[in-house]
Image (cartoon, rainbow, N blue to C red; front, side, top):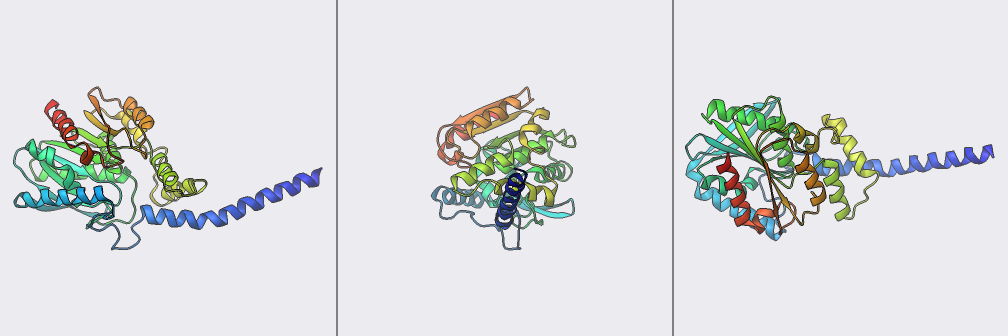
Length: 314
């Protein structure tokens, strides 16, 4: 009987070792593809999904908006945490400005698409290349956490250098997480008056798991190996540094835009995120059409109306 259990233990241990030998290289590849700028040409200022009809339409509409307002644009830059970060400021006068925070793989040109409802209200627009994207320096995506500290630095720049007295954050997916992290940061300037998030997740592990399931990739143990690699490389524990925890400290006015058909930031989890938010001035807009990060193009009037109403309420 003793030898039976010893043999069983050896078999189980051998199986675990074999599984790790097989899955460790997979997790390394997945992590580097999704969250590491492995060379200078990765995540450039191009459309991230030109084969996706809606994504390309969003990209082209955004470029057209930028062309129409090119005379208002100035290139801007800051240094934060040893990284050179760049952006474009569309200055429409006045003392208000929104910082648009894009998602993973997206450059500042992607953010043009979200600028119109703010510009229509006379709000200046700052679009940025997140760290490790576009022309900004950096190697690692931290799925919104360090990007949130960058957003705080950009807000300080607007206040100190551009005479802006009211700042808003508008973030999509990981950009939404960055907006929450920034607004909940004790160092966030008082001039930051509110945030808008679209399709934000409760934690990155949850949304990445949904990506893997939908794309028919093996989930376990690769998923958690990727999260561990992220932790080892950047110090970000996605179960601790997550929007669901950060919103419990969020006091600023916040508009959460959710999609009823979002397969990555699913409605059940989105409701938990909204419920956990500590702000006494929070609101939510549920949009019936469009997938993850494709809500405005499918519900433009309602989306822009929600943003304008939020601005007018501040």
